[in-house]
Image (cartoon, rainbow, N blue to C red; front, side):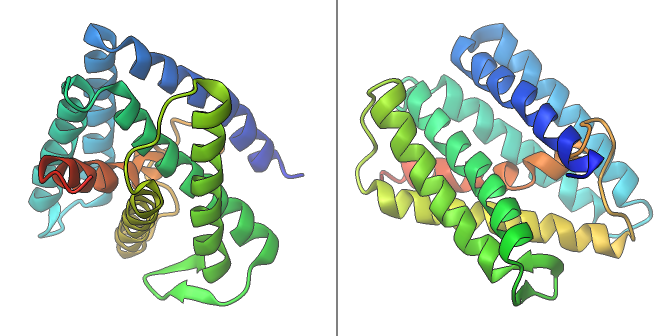
Amino acid sequence: MSQELIKRILSSIILIPTVFFIIMKGSFLFIFFILICFFIIAYEWFMMSKNKPYRIFGYFFLIISFFTIYKMRVDETLGVWIFIFITIICISTDIGGFVFGKLLKGPKLTKLSPNKTFAGMIGGYLFSLTSLVIFTKYSFGTELPNNWPLLVFIVSSISQMGDIFVSYFKRLSNIKDTGKIIPGHGGVLDRADGMIFAFPFSYMLFFLDIF
């Protein structure tokens, strides 16, 4: 097992429970947390998109994305569990894609992101579906949203598209990672790329009362 993989696992063991604790606590702690994430990601985008004509559009998107993240967490009609559901789908999609992609490899998914494979895509769907069922059934006994398999598929798809989209911009900038702040993972944007796309789309789905 490589040192980078060990760092990635150890970072995840610390980072994931911390993030869920902050989400559950909410209030000022959550606001402070997403503000810190916003400024770090905005800085990483600034460094990645220097002198690029599309830089300003990235800032607008990040503002909209983090606003929807904030709104989904504080919206009493949705509740904290919906926010947690979306977070679980994104995290498990990322993990499933990494595990299946590394173990099975196989055909490439798209030229926009050469490291992405069909095996990783399927792994993302399977992990997100399985982890959500385990979480709701054995951890807290919460009820899943209506049409939850469709919700998993849609959010996981958007999360994977966000990952590919950011990977494409990293290729344009000739960089592997957006930063080095998280050992074994890279930058905050490297880990949140799927989420910053999934949350605005999810907010729209719930706002339109589709779920």
